[in-house]
Amino acid sequence: MSNIYIAGIAMTVFGRHIERPLDDLAREALNGALKDAGCTTGDLGAAFYAGMTNGPLQGQISIPGQVVFSKIGIEGIPIYNVENACASGSSAFNLAVQSLKAGATDVALALGAEKMNIADKMKAFSIFEGGWDVSRAEENYQTLVKMGEGVVPPPGTESDKPYSKFMQIYAALCRFHMKTYGTTQRQIAAVSAKNHTHSVHNPYSQFRKPFTIEEILAAPPITYPITLPMCAPLSDGAAAAILCTEEGLKRIGADKSRCIKVAASVIRSFTHRRLDEPQKNIGRLAALQAYEQAGLGPEDMHVAEVHDASAMGEILQVENLGFVPLGQGGPAAERGEFTLGGRLPVNPSGGLESKGHPLGATGIGQLYELVTQLRGEAGDRQVQGARNAIQENGGGLQGIEEAAVAIHILSK
Image (cartoon, rainbow, N blue to C red; front, side, top):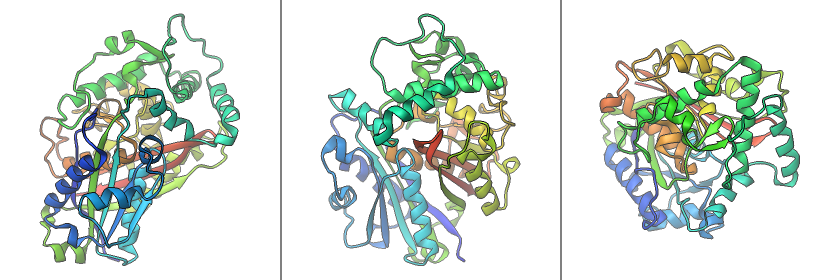
């Protein structure tokens, strides 16, 4: 079977793009990826569009991909619309890989784009309330919040401003980890401080201001132990990737020295596991499957981008990816093991907390960072000698874990 390669990849700056329409952001990402690959829209055999907000925020309930692509020069080929919560972009990428492996085409596009910043901020927040079984929303909420029982929030650690209910769930995950493994708020803050510091060197990042651990701890609270800089913002942006088989690379005349191999592409969905079965965590199972597919292990990874919608997410995922034993993500972060220059840099882009989190574009944005690292083009945030990279991107909630998780391993 032919290997699959990323021939071109690009992203916009993630942030608040109030004046720019969605198709303008998508066009920038597409044109950047086409230029990077050295091809044109006429070379594309299939296109996968990832977006969550087109319907609820812009009113484009159906055919968002066809509508966006019609405005940026793509028509006639198969176009698929992909919605898989925050893992939508990674899912579009996975489907592009599958189409290439199936022989349906030799060049495929995965593109994610979102416009989340609108006048009605609470309407934008409501997007997240659909990321679970809405027919059992209160039951879901009570089940997940119970995970945090036994940790009493100190006075003054609850925001008096409205925020997404999912922040309380993230806080419950934090508290469960704290009481189970001894993780501290300072260790969670260390993750956030690291990622904000990394983002200073990323020109595509929504925020580029460094924070110390003390500044993270002293920042406005959301709900204990989470403070404002520990959370991903509402973001607008787009990212696009052009994938090829060996035959496709030859057809478009791509520079193979800059092409990055997709060594593994895995999507898994939740199971009804119990809290006392962390070895069955969806992220752990997906990672094991990806390592087997790639013929590599966690010890072979040189750089990682993981889903940190809150800083606690990184701690959970470095454990699931096998970089440290369960319960050791916090101490390792505090020791600097996942900082640029450390044992295994994680989120050199700044992560979702700093780079931004435009849902459908997020996963492809993570892959952009890893491709940039493997090409040795990351500048001041470059991980020296990086040859293998791993991405983790989760979406939605079912049971006590993500509804969907994507893992991709890339190799130079």
